[in-house]
Image 1 (cartoon, rainbow, N blue to C red):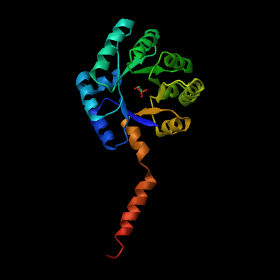
Image 2: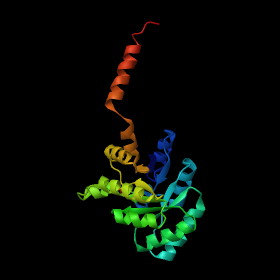
Image 3: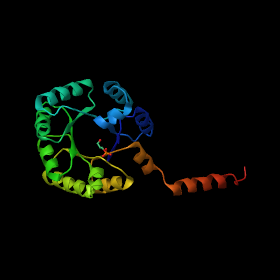
Image 4: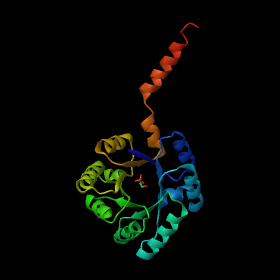
Length: 214
Ligand code: G3P
C-alpha cells in the first residue's frame, strides 16, 4: 500500500519525506488555507520535496472553468494529479481529462456508486473520505471494502486512495482490504511508527548494554 501525506504544511512534508517511505502528497483547499501562504508557492515547494504524485484541487465547479484550471495545474509538473470534486461537472471533466492523459483524483466520494462512476470516467484515483463518514455514524471502512470489491470485479485501473484517515486502525483496515493508497495526516504517520513496547524495550537494551564488560 502506498503512503501519501495529507497536508500542505511543508515542514511536515519535509519531515515525513526524510523517513524515506513517503510515496506522495494530497492537498485540498482547506489544507492550503491553513498554510497562510500563496498556494502556487507552496505547491512548488512540495514538488521539490517529494518525487511522487502530488494532488492539487480545482476550485471551479463549472465544466469549462474546471478543465482550464485542471490543465493549468497539470502543466506545472509531471507529478501533479488534479483533484476533482465528485459532482456532475466533475465526472464529466474527469472523462475529458482522462482522454487527454491528465491524471485525476476524484475527491469527496461517499458512496460506492459514486466510485463506480469515477472509475468509468477514467479517474486515476478515487478518494473516499472514511473519517467524515465515521463522524456521522456511518462505517467509513465499509465503503472502502465495497469499492475495492467493485473495482476488482471489473478490473478498473482507478486506484483506491483512502482519505480522511484519522487513526492507525483506518490504516490497518485499508491495508487488509487491499486499498492501493492511504493519505494520512503527519500525526497518524507518527502513530503508525511509535509503539510503547519498542520504546521501553530499547530503553532496557541500552541500559543492559552499559553492564556489558569492555
Ligand atoms: O484531503 C481530503 C481528506 O483527507 C480530508 O480529511 O480529516 O478533513 O476529513 P478530513
